Image (cartoon, rainbow, N blue to C red; front, side):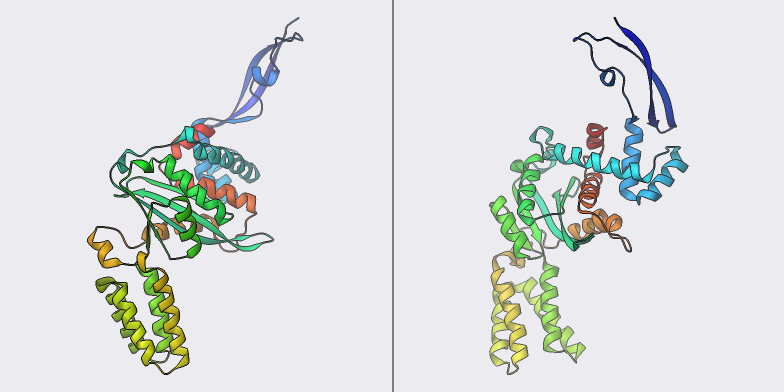
Length: 343
């Protein structure tokens, strides 16, 4: 015998929370479906409301997002519900972006350079202290297409993530993959392992920072001499290349009589010598390569720091990973597509 009934549920839209009712038929025979399948239960989001909720929560604190949604769009949802929504959606986003079936190929990179950037940002994790969040940015040669991925975890998992995202955006169609980094050996080794054909370049300004530190140690009490020394060798590196710079530094080291100065020069020489194949800036500039990692510095600020490094802000590892996943999708060119698949 079939039973007829009604079940109500709440539907969240841009016009506020609507209470709707649905009719269902149910019987005890084995062919009938459960009430939960016949009639939706619980709170559901329209696509427009879901996009608004996620974007506001990813851009503001949970409490502030709840206030803005209520005042601006009449969407009544608590900050705890927003936290739960971010946690649920982040898992769907991660699964979709890691799946080869949801690859988002870029036609713009065909026979052109694909630039990749990686860097680390420290986040305050509860019961663990400051932990490094690894951030990846891919963009086409003209910066029109951008993709971000982030990981709050081991660098051993970050390398495969970099490779997977390269495959999903169709990196094989590009002329060459070029990575710009700060010279950290951990990133260098794992990128080389997962993308062995990619060209790696150490950011020019990070190398200049090491030269500047050495200049300060050589002339701690004379700012003018320190500044003159720094400018001389930074210019030499950019215009004449690392071989001439290393030769000049080794001559200075052999003539120095101070143990502390010899140690400072040795440290700089070792840093440059281990990366000599990645800092040949005259050749790189002549071939039309970028030599600065400004885009990833911007991404670290906009994607991670603006939302996740507020004053006194701390995250659980699960909550931080969830927010990072949503923020990376928000600042990529696949945001609307991602929200549609998660609604």
